[in-house]
Image (cartoon, rainbow over all chains, first blue to last red; front, side, top):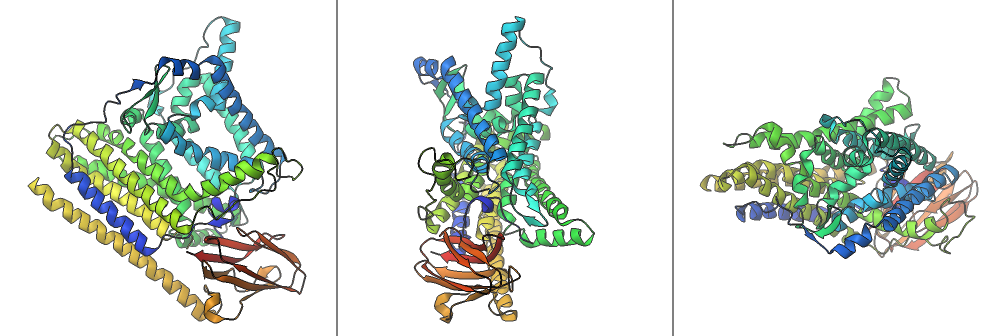
Length: 464
Length: 139
């Protein structure tokens, strides 16, 4: 049996594990940074107010004008259409078909990175939102009134998106197996899944309203939108503005299920990073055990991976909940119901750091393919050469192993420090006395150190 | 803050120990696995071209590598040399470096190229999609 991370089906190269000395340095820096963060503790919350300032009415008028919005929507719909068409009609070779790289690398990995830097850039290009808005406008023009929607059950909050996120990763890394061998998702299955998801999303938008569903249930809006809370560009009242970095995230987790979204992100990245390394032998013995019980090879592999993804989710959730539970021991602590969502946003930088650490090199290499041969020959059949780049290859020399290692460890350390900063700031809101607040943060510090060192550990045993 | 000054270093030390312990154990088990497998099945563990001097040969029987996927390890700048001796006709593809050679049934092809790209690469029988070697190039 061979277990391969998703990246394997696309990229011809895998990262070397980080060496022991870099692991030790990374972990030491994390601990020192944590210590400094506690010592330098500020006494008044600084991230509760975003201090949003408009970047100028002219810019906003231009960006949010109907023609620009329509154009962005069209681009989104067109690219989704190309991906689905390529997936259905193009080659079954995963690395030569536009669909897989576009959906799972350019979009799925690209938007978290760029959202954190530039704000919610997915929103204007969201193809389902564009279709939903056009449908809504059409309805108003014909019926002369706004479409009536069901009231969204508030208790569900972002749970549909959290479950959806697990489903996307399940499809990406678990579904594509045959005969006990992980062969990776094939383009045809990816396109079919995109079609099914489009139908489901449009139906939900019709039921609950386009913006309502984007805010709560639409996986990609919620997931990319989560990362956009970190950056310093944001939209308020239809105007683009600058705000204090990290501050917008303070109020992101107010909807139920938000913590599950960020936990699902960390858990799924961990699983993908660990299946070839840290979890390899455990996965193999579970697989063998299931096969001995008479399960078919494909079913056994899928079931094994499903169990391990759910275990990752449970494990990450447990560490977080232990940290939150620990804070209850500090006098004057708010209720568990308030603490539980209260620190969820502090995990967003950790989730982003995990993504960068595990997928940075894949993204850099695979985007060369995206903008060279996949754009010129989206079907991968060798019959088209739209931009004259169909025969271009990927230059694996642009990143040395050392450069990748430093980016990986650097991302984890920076994510760790940002998470600590946000957690301390939130604690100052709950505990008016800054000494109590600092004491409560020993718990969150332990959570963050656990996640960061676990992330470093995964990198150090990757592809073992 | 007096209380804090005791708890924090204790916590930090605890986590540091846990971190270093997991680092150490991970390293040991890996070395063990490597030396163990190469002792019981010579040629199965990672081998370095600069060490032996002889060129490793990957033998393909019934379209599969004898002894499982061969691990080959090099440092950047080394010369990567290996031979593939196959009982089936196929094309040997070294990914990343993107080198391809046809091997006829019962024939042997040899590869000889500089290790100039760092990372982990697979060599496979392209037609059968069967991985035959894992090539590691360390910086």
